[in-house]
Length: 202
Image (cartoon, rainbow, N blue to C red; front, side, top):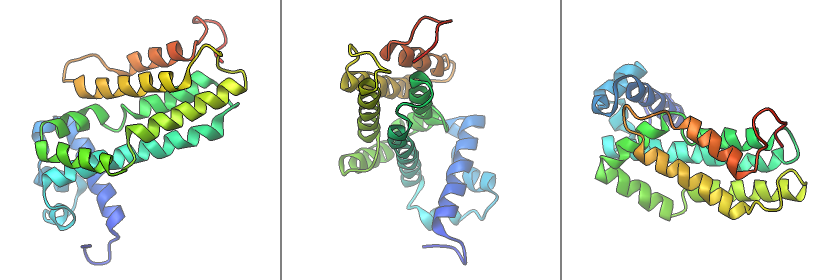
């Protein structure tokens, strides 16, 4: 269902972006349908015109952000041989934690109906961590063939470590805990065998 003359995808993104601002500024406890539509500057009933309720909205927000990151991860293959391996891989790694990722994931975990919907969608083939892992593996394999990643680096294992760590950080990043981005950046450098600080990166 779409409001008069407004394309549904535009409305969805408007609401998703508004929800991310509410979460970032006020935390999960402040996320209500009214808070989202107020932040988006639209009619109070707009969210329910597109979603069955807040649980469905939260699930769709998580799935949309997973899909967006998966699309960007798949573009890694085009960067093989260009720029820095650490920088290329780090960009995707940090995407997993950006756009309110930790807060959104934590919110979904507190809403069983949303968490179930997300799990079912991922099991049904919705793009998520598996797609991202496969994209990272393919990128590292290409860079290894080009000699920009050491032969001692095993792409599938490095990819699993990267995505698994991102998942762990998303699920354990509570208010007051250190920013996980620094840990992710160090992990990327370690996984691809980056030279010590001060030496050129691959």
